[in-house]
Every structure is written in C-alpha cells, then in structure tokens.
Amino acid sequence: MSNEFRELLKRVGSGTHTSKNLTRAEAATATEMMLLQIATPAQIGAFMIAHRIKRPTPEELAGILDAFDRLSHKLEISPAHQYQPVVLGTPYDGRSRTVPVTIITALILATANVPVVLHGGDCLPTKYGIPLVEIWQQLGVDFSSLNLAQAQSVYNQTNLGFSYLPQHFPAAHNFVTFREQIGKRPPFATAELVWCPIAGEAHLVAGFVHPPTEERFRETFKLRGTKNYTLVKGLEGSCDLSRNRTGIMALSQPEGNFERLLLDPHKYGLSGSDLTFESNTQAIALIKETIQGEKNQLFSAAILNGGFYLWRFKITHTLESGFALAEQMLTTKKVANKLSELQSMSNEALSSN
Image (cartoon, rainbow, N blue to C red; front, side, top):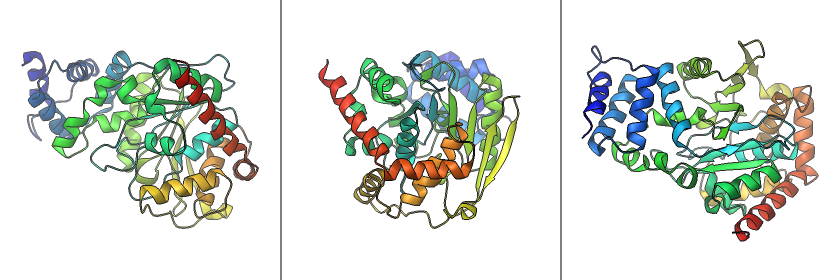
C-alpha cells in the first residue's frame, strides 16, 4: 500500500463538504502512481469513484494529462506533412446509439492532405459501444497489430495515424479492469477526450455532452498552453455533428480567445434524423457504402461533418464550399482511394517486420 497515495485519496474522498481539490502536480502524481500501479487496486478503485463524485477541476485534468504525456509512447509529427496535425478525440467506450462518421471525416481530411490522428482501445465499459479500432479492422486496416514504428510509418505516408492503447499506452489500458468493476466513467474518461497522442503541437478536436465540460476543457487548454482546439456538442460526446439540431461549437482563435459557432444543418440542406445504431454489421455496412460514394442514409452526415472540418482547417474558405468539396471527394472515389492506400500501407508495414 502507498501511504503517499492514501493521503491524496483522502483529499478527494472526504465527502461533499470536506473534500479538497488537488493541485496540478498532485493530480499528476496520483495519476502516475495509478498508471504504474504503485497504488493498490483498492486505492485505485476508491480514487476513481471519489474523483468522479467530486468532479475533476481544470487543474486536475491538466495534471492527469501531464502524467499521460510522461508515460505514453507518442507518434511524431512528420516534417513532410503540409498542415498541423489534427487529433479527433472520441469516447473510448464507443458508440451505441448513433452510427459514427468519425472515420469518414478522418479519411476526408487525409484526402485533403490534413494529417489526422485518432486514438482508443478495444470495446470498453461503460457503454461497450463499437470502438474505432474495430471499424478500421472491418475496413481492412488493422491498427491493433501495428507497433509504434509501424504506425508512424503509415501515418507519415497516408496522413492517417492511430494510437492504439494496448500497444502504445499499455499503462492506461490497464485501467479497463477498474472501469469494468466500478461501473461508472472515471475522470480519465474525460481526460482521454482531450489527450494528444502525437508529440508536439496539434489541433485538438473533442466532443462534449454537458456545457460545463466544454468550459472545463477550455480552462484545461489554457493551463497547458493548448492554442488550437475545436470543441463540439457532438453525438454521444463525440466530435460528430448532429443533423438533428443546431451544432454548438467553441473554436479557438489566434489571439487566444474563442469564437462561439452555431451551425444549423437546415440552412445548408443537410438536416435530418441522426441515423440510429442497430448493430455493428449495420453501421459498418453504411460506413463502407458512404466511403464508396453511395448516397445512402449516412451520406448527408458525412458531408456535414467532412465539410465543416474542411472549412475549420482552412482547406476551403466557406462552409458551403467545404460541403461541396466533401461531397465531391466522396462521389469521385477520392476518399475510397485514400482508404485503399491506407490498406496497402498498413499491410506493407506489417509485412516489413
């Protein structure tokens, strides 16, 4: 048992009226002790529940992310890439209510030469939704089999990277057992949305459900010196925009503040119902069709999201031209060709070692 960790646990676990916030350094220390399993399983589980009840502060989130940075293995920025890398943060426990378009968005951006990195692990609690890595596998790209050097090679050549936790950050992957046993998302589930799995400056994109989370993220970014970010009230806490409601976003600005953007899909002829997730088979079939340019039930969602992010990362000057370019990339098979390239490069990376 760690006496040092016990003192930190007592700070956050003393109840509604007497618990105290940790400093950034203390939160980093506590996180490192859990990641390295210096703390006992009982202490780790107790901390996760206590911290969830208390709610993490921006300082504590910054400390958690500091520890993640120190103990993880990251991809490197490629000097050959034309644009700053974009990290699409999405909940590690996957999607279970709506069909995701995150991977289609990533492929559209990569087709436009914007380097994109995603991250996550296998099917996780509490939602046990379909994870990104499984969708990639069904698309013929097995990121779970790539070591860090192989993943780096694929990223350098295709503009698409994936940080697979069991391979690249096994210490964080060890938290899965605790997440299963406590039955609730710990604060790490919040921090992972805004963690950067690539060394150096990147543009962080993250979703949120509750407005206080957006403010907490912005304060965390300020503490950590994160200058470029996009925060989206997205589907199931992801960075996927909804077709069924006005999108609420916080867009970082060069002078250091942020701009509030309200995006109404109806204004651009892209409104409609968000597609209900029925099964992994159904979702993957729709994603495959959309990548091939078929105008199915998911197509408008792909245009809405792809077009918005093309505009956000300055590939187009207007939202309208972003939507038009996203549609053109899909219907002319450019996105499908990017997937084929990714399949080829990932297979080549696997066979080279």
